[in-house]
Image (cartoon, rainbow, N blue to C red; front, side, top):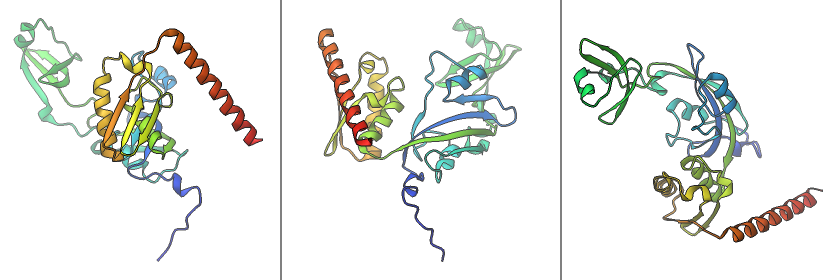
Length: 265
């Protein structure tokens, strides 16, 4: 029997199922090399898939929770923090194989009833399913509800940027997942027994998806962290008071940095 020698300070960085991590990546179609997804704004612009509405930053996930495609999820296990790797994912573990039953035919007049003039490539939403029009002819409209990447092998360039271990840090990571427009580090999180108290940043207060995001975040906290209660707090202040608070926070940060520098010296 062979025993693997434990490497102090390294084995703790090896990723396992259930770990909370931040990763960056670029996904390409294997056969064409075309980029279809990336966390890099620069790569997105070069590939022509950039959008002002998209947020480009590291992806916050729990390994094994289905936050990314199965093949990528499995490939993360055993990697180390800071490690970069290129992996190929088969269609079965990426976006699935093409399913002929997902190609549907409709009467053209059904579209005209709703004032819609379909054309090849047009994105349609029928009965809660999103697809693309393949063909329009003979009074018939053929729509494909398979994923555009169905049946295609993909290649991911991944970089494991960080693994978080503290309870509050894990909650901040989840916040970035469900509130994609904020930085989790800007949020104050306090855990008291089986309860988490989350002070939401200003950006969340008036966002249209805030309620749903709170619900999803709470469910993840319950199922993955074992807590039983989540309290969200939103603070509203007069502008004068906000400026005073910001000044005090900046002073505290400066003092903390000074203390840190003194310790390093």
